[in-house]
Length: 475
Image (cartoon, rainbow, N blue to C red; front, side):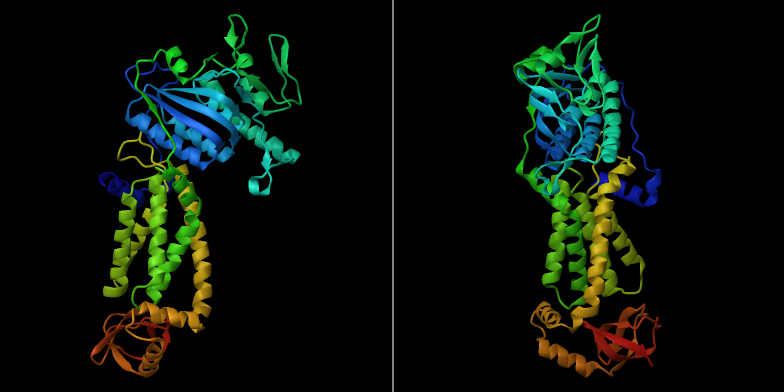
């Protein structure tokens, strides 16, 4: 929790625009730490968020264990470009040696990721390449022809990203571009290996063939029969081998984070309805349950500490104190609302374990939570505007009020009480801004004005009800 509170303080004291991750980066190509373990991280199926969570966990564990080597066990047809870019950023956090083992195939995004490691080794009969961008048909059931302008734009952007990684790790840039851009011809030592209009795909034999003087492999550093053979080839057969296996909870975390805007919207609406109705009932249970799932998803996915859930709870308690016990003080409610807002944002920020405890994540890491929060607030505001106008007039609302009153008042009794109170006068105990407390005889009630501010000691009269709240005017 110490780290959580340190970051919490920085969250409100430091402007977003000034945040930047700090830390020294070692040069690529440094000799691996021979004493550390070897981590094998699988990249299977399509490159989608569930794969991202597995890689994130593996890199964090490798960093914590001071691993000497990370091996990507690759077998994929490709996947989403945005997920690929984020995955490459995560890999970049590990400053030790990284190797890709193409176990069977590394198409499209798999090829992009492969060149973001220092070495590529391939299994017998494996292939790598065919990395040109495609446009998925609706529903993800196939591919469509991509418009020329879109194809040029996507190819240019992806090519620059992959080319930068290829140059950094010493791979043949011309080979990589021939895998992406069909307008490129690959000519090595006078041999045309890929004609214009074609997309390059290499077998393990072709990728490992040497060209030039002195000879240098086209792309692959060698063909090895299996992972054990790879470890022996790298001279780390005595190192501890740690395999990262996907878990069911990571699949759950991926699903929860995909619906995070919906969970936030349900949570906001649930708490709003709970504050508008007496007692504690179904809206509050649903709202709190949605927030629990939201924070649980971030924790399961390895994005943040569960401590941000505790920060949210403390903020909620402060907000309840402001609304129910000491209305009108403002400071308690503002602090509570700020804590809740900060916890919601920080719960989906991907922590970099290489940073010191006092550091703050990079600004770009706030994109996902801010996008989710914006969508949720827009949806909740639209819902509240509609519900505030029409719901109090419906039978459903009257039933809900009756149910959430926990049996204290039936629907008819509640309506009768409201009718009897209209016209009562009382003395203002706390300033109405517009909510506050008024004493009616021996009874003190929470009331709201019609928008105007009414000072302590003024006399007011009940003229109507908004849900369960008396509406008063000054007399």
